[in-house]
Length: 387
Image 1 (tube, rainbow, N blue to C red):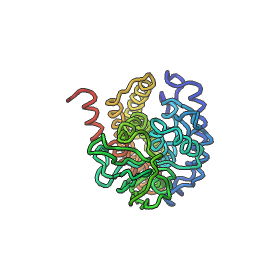
Image 2 (cartoon, rainbow, N blue to C red):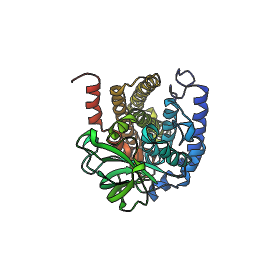
Image 3 (cartoon, rainbow, N blue to C red):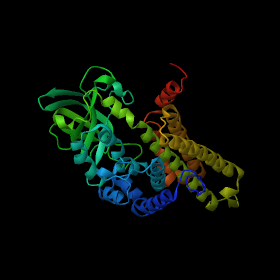
Image 4 (cartoon, one colour):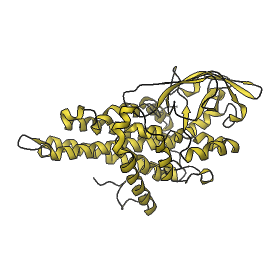
């Protein structure tokens, strides 16, 4: 199926973008897609995949060249997200790219020493980075987090827990939100907590989807973290957390629409070969209408995605519209996954079928990176619907 994301006539994509898309498509087809069923069964994927992803420029995308990145624009990010979605396994994207949420605070506000210590090995695929924000007592309400960090000489003493943390078991570096001051956003700081720190333990979590993604609850029991591991200034962590949300949500929206397109492609291929009532499933008007409705939503979402990415590249910060984009994309994914499974019939209910996996992974996309309800409320405020 053609689209503005893939066509040469788009005003947003250059020859450089097209070359990167070709590299990514070959990488996914060779190194990921053939193995996703095996990885889902194993609940993990080989650590070697990080190094391979670094070699094709994926891990460094959007990060400064000084630390091993390649400063790719948002359209490179969209390409990466949507080409990765072709594998049909969101768990691969989540864990392989957990550094895209763990490392930006270090890039934006971290000390030079911290950047030099963390970023190069992560972008080479030698180390893994994770972000620890969500707590058992609440997720989207970041300003009211309860994990504490008390200054004691040249260390912080950390106590508390985090949950639903992607790369929570395997990561080497954890960028963790802690409370160093009073209540509310003004008391939040960020600390880099490293694997092996005494008092730091993890428990793996079993999930409905993203089966090959490493997800865990983290526990901090009097962890002593060096003061030099403070990311940015004390009590200024909330601002650093918020700073990356636009890029993260554009990436998530791109991926969701990429998975929606995979559902359409899989459903179309099935309908063309599935024999029913003396013909093919595609011969039935009801099937063609389902496919048309899927395409309509995908193309509308892609247009919104690319326009907002262009606006961000021009220096705008359309926060409200990006919140709505994320919801538009996750709802498009949900619609297309549902229709694709329906078109597949009983086959769509069997493990190992791509649309079955995507269907199970729909819900996490409507929660992660900002739940749909929170996105609507934030968009309402940003767009001036209420004070």
